[in-house]
Image (tube, rainbow, N blue to C red; front, side, top):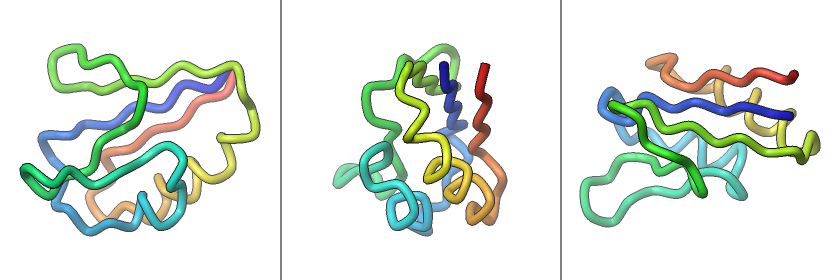
Length: 76
């Protein structure tokens, strides 16, 4: 299981996550912040739980590229 978490309210809209993991992240046309696709929002933390371990590498690249460190990736 791969768990990706995004603190969307702290997003600055740099677009690095979309460049690194376009299958999981997309920029919102409404506010210019990133959206974690297929995620559940719980009090500002958007969480994606996926059994697909192939997304982990790109999501980790996105987390490392994020200048405000609002993306976390865990594999369990």
